[in-house]
Image (cartoon, rainbow, N blue to C red; front, top):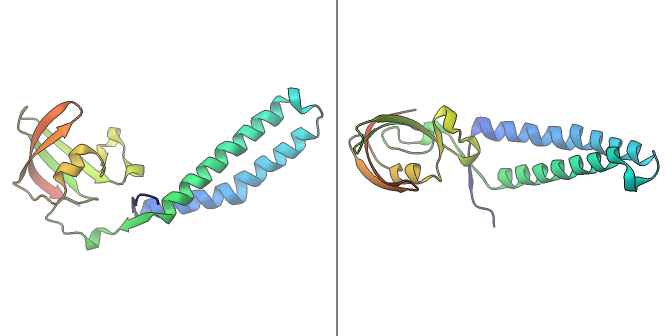
Length: 157
């Protein structure tokens, strides 16, 4: 059984489009390359054939990955989420009580996480430790770097 995959509606639609492209465009193109390369003779020393087979294998892995994500997707719509609490889709302004530094994160599904954009996965220790909390609440969170204490300053969507 697949673990639920949390996705925004936008990411869900992007994955559906990517899957359609891979199945209807890329896979047939690669299959055609394989056929053309196979026509060049000895397959044991045919780099073009080997490269095309590898590309097909990687494409099939991606198709399977997307299919699994879509079949286990739990789409969240921001309108259905309590705006006063930390849930997926929330942007949370925090005060690190140990360093007095302010940090801001947006909690997203694992596929949308991007540390360079301050988007953290709902599965991360910090997000898990903040879920359901409200502005003013504090949370002691065990991270790989050790225990961190945060106070929630603000939640926006």
